[in-house]
Amino acid sequence: MENKKGGLVGWLFGSSIGYLRRFLFRVLSVGPIPNHLAFILDGNRRYARKWDLGEGMGHRAGFLSLMSLMKYCYELGVKYVTIYAFSIDNFRRRPDEVQGVMDLMLEKIEGLLKEESIVNQYGVRVYFIGDLTLLSETVRSAAEKAMKVTSNNDKSILLICVAYTSTDEIVHAAQEACEDKRHELLSMKKINDAQNGEIGKEKLGENNVIKIADIERNLYMGVAPDPDILIRSSGETRLSNFLLWQTSNCLLYSPKALWPEVGLRHLVWAVLNFQRAHAELEKRRKQL
Image (cartoon, rainbow, N blue to C red; front, side):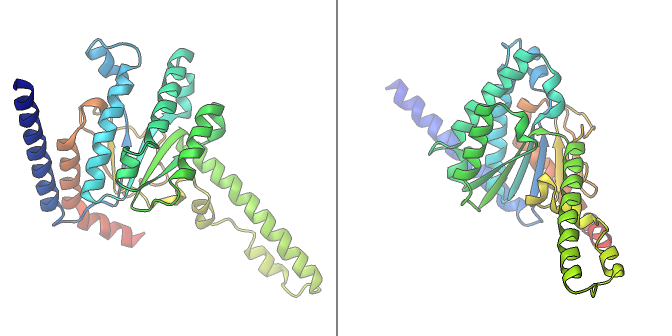
């Protein structure tokens, strides 16, 4: 009998919290809602030390926080969510720590594909962003499978940056743009030779220039618009080589909470700040 009462109370409490959250989101929706939120997940290891948790438990606690925040974002109507899961620089950490993170990543990627996962509940398409060749074969295969399985989902987009840094992304984009331009010029030269030089050297010279659009077309993050808000936990204000190209007109928010402690109140505060600054942000974007 006691168990039934406890279960009923828990259900009523959970339902009440869910109702209040949805009501809060409806109020927020009166104002502009960000289309794209990006997160730097900082503080997992410090959280584990703070609470004297075992090795790797901070990352697991951080994953639970991530799942909650993703749910809130999609309920609120945010279409794109980007997370900085693992930097190229993180490969310099202790081998056992890197392996632990890779094992957790593999476990959670497989979990994302389960029927009851948030990916299926909210129709989320998953992208893995970065130099995936740096990942182990098993993790890379799981990532590629997740992208393939969710490729028909279009309600929401989750971008997971792994083996990623912004400088690597920009260098990669520049190299790809140069290669594209080389193929384009070779093709034009063949046409020019076939037409006895009718295209002209001036026209060929104009097409020899790499433009910003050529770089942006080849960025890893080219599948999504620039973020409206970038949230970094732990009170840190550094971007740590994350989305340097995409955040020139982005609202930055750095709550002091460690990543596993970040929750609904931080998301709401970030959205309120965005709504307050929205007119100025839009004005700047139109000037670009």
